Length: 332
Image 1 (spheres, helix red, strand yellow):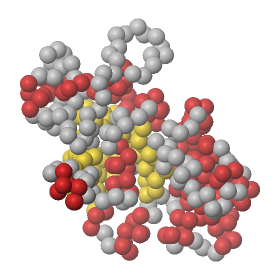
Image 2 (cartoon, rainbow, N blue to C red):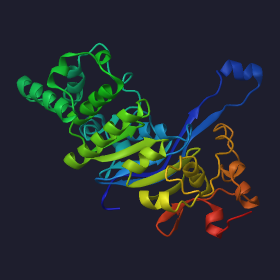
Image 3 (tube, one colour):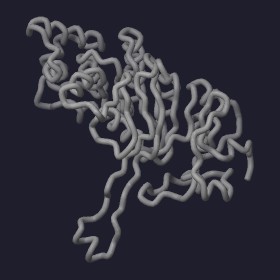
């Protein structure tokens, strides 16, 4: 797509989780590989929030780290604003890298406890060579702190002097300091109290409107995703099983796994509709089921589901990887 800022094509990541060579020889074991991300393709348009949702172990955080370059893909392509990230040299990658940042799940672990807040926020600017004279940059740190709802006096303090919500505001200010266009948000509110979550989410939406930011928002909390996302991709065991506009996915989910996730969300409107409880657990990614990996938990699975792996196909405005949806089946 011409308006896509980030384009992911056939992205895969395999981890070698084998025992050391000598142990394998003595115990007569083969190598073991964990497929964390399996042939994932999607795009993120400029100015939108694309969310990835799924249970723990579905590969959400691995995709986030692949996109920002913290780990290398085993296969596939990541394109940022028309540039293939994997083919860039160190100099050109440093220039490109300043255009996207990441906000991590744990705001305390992601901040250097030995640095003052002003040094933490200034780090991306020093790294990417964006600083002017020192006085101008100190003013910029003060501005960023005020933008995220803190005081300029907080720049002289250390991270341990703040609450979890305040530390996440500092992390957001650090991400903004490089003047990025794209921010990867890896469950940025999951470690916070519910009341603080709402404040951080509202802040992120205001910043998106003010600076024209594009977000990849990763979460397992569908109520948070509903508030933030314009489009949503549903992950299961490293594969995308459904991609849809946010309103469409919540109003008319197609894939049985998506329906299962939505049925787990409390029905605050008390509609009285029949709900299906979450059944089973996500399989072992080292030894995944054959065919569609969701079939052991799916009430609509048939023999084809157990032997063939469905690919994403378009059904109206929704992309779904499900034979039951293709066949129009509502029962086995």
